[in-house]
Amino acid sequence: MADHAQGDVRSLQGLTAILAALSLALFAWIYAGFVRAFRDAAAGEQMLDARIGGYERDDVIAMQRYLKDHPDPAAILHSMYLGPELIFPLVLAGLLFCLLRLVGPGGTFFKRPISPAVIALIFCLPVFYGVMDYAENIAGLLLYPPAAPSDATVTLLAGLLPIVVRLKFLSLVITIILLARFAILRYLSADGSKPS
Image (tube, rainbow, N blue to C red; front, side, top):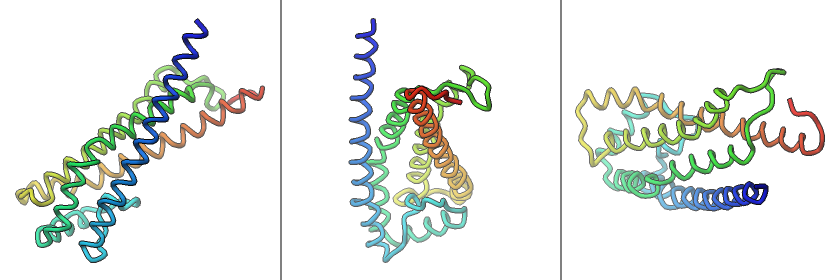
């Protein structure tokens, strides 16, 4: 039984390593192949997807108008959505989920045991991240050329995209913070210290 559990852990570690390598390769492809190419084609204009700090409704509308008149950056952005961005959210969400499985969320929080419902919610965070990332990509495909959205669609998506991006980064940051917390607690408990 112990050998079976150890084999499961090794399998999970192997899958995690593969997903980490894939995530890194896809991120490098997105940055080197699309983000930099977009910036060069758009005379220094930065792709909204590359803005870590997020963006606002007016930024979305301005980008949509800009891309209407500039087909090269629009084609680069469209190719990114239909290329590496088709699988990157899934791979990164899978990596985050596997890392959570490896660190094993548990212990206490403010001297109270973490309930199974909260642990289940923690495991939903990577899934939520993936859904929000795909929602951002789908909105970009519907909004930016070669798509020709109506004014009502532009207004709707320009209002929704900043919210989706904030939710995406919020879920990613919370997942990373929780991963760090549980990894530290696991390390301390392995040394005989009592996790809290």
